[in-house]
Structures are given as structure tokens and as C-alpha cells.
Length: 171
Image 1 (cartoon, rainbow, N blue to C red):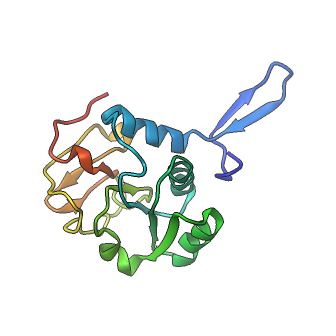
Image 2 (cartoon, rainbow, N blue to C red):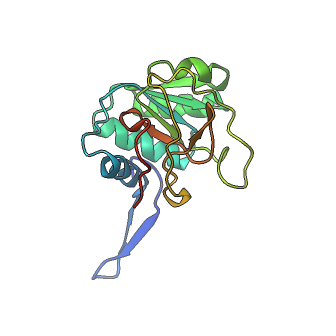
């Protein structure tokens, strides 16, 4: 929680003190491993869309678990740049206008923005540059895992390329 600078779980200890945790990043990584036990954070470049709390959690966890290259793309470049400077390599900030180029050769695309989520404006991003051909691969919206359709990324995106075209993942 300190590294991410956000708390989403508070535990009341036996002595009455409060301890804060953040489970977002670990939950994200665990959902990838639940879907593909062989998935590794160092399997290729990663693009994370967004620079808010969820993005910070995902970036911090992926970096701590060995990701070699994380491209952080955000509409407000300065926010992405701040996170990249804070976490250092392997994180680099990418301008929103360069988002298509950022997708070249990626092994994982994670949407940590509200764009593209249910009830929000669509996420304007092309996925033609992902290294693997895609077919529809979806799971329930509750996990915010993967939904790809017609060459566009639609609500709630994280995409382990090793699962391209596989059967739907269900919890």
C-alpha cells in the first residue's frame, strides 16, 4: 500500500490498530495466473492504459514481479511520466497520441482507465499491432479481464497473448 500510495483494504488488528493493504495489483496478476499458470510478467512488453490508482497498483506489482518493459499510456502525459519516474525502469511513459505505436509487440494490454468500461465512453484504441492474431475472447465483466471485439478493445481490457483465441475463461 505504501509503494502504491493507496489503501483498499483495512484490517483491524487484535490490539485495535488499523493496517492498510492494497490488493489491486496482486489480484490483477493472480487473475492472469488463474487463467494461464504459465504466464510470466517478463514474457514481453506490457502496455498499461491509465495513470490513476488502479494503474499504479498494476505497474507496481508487474515491476516487482519481474516485468522488463512496461509502457504506461495516458491522456495526461505528465501523470504517466510521474509514475514512470517514481517506479523507474522498467516503466516508460507514452503520450496518448502515440498509443498505437506503444502496442507494437506487446504481450499484455491492461486497461486501467474508465474509458471502455460499462456506462463510460468507448476506449479509442486499435489493436492491429498486437503480436498475435485475435479472436473473440471474453469473460464476465465482474473481473474486468478481457473483452475483444472486431479489432477494437471494448470494456475492461487485460490481454495475455498466450490466451488469444482460447476458450472463454470463467471463474
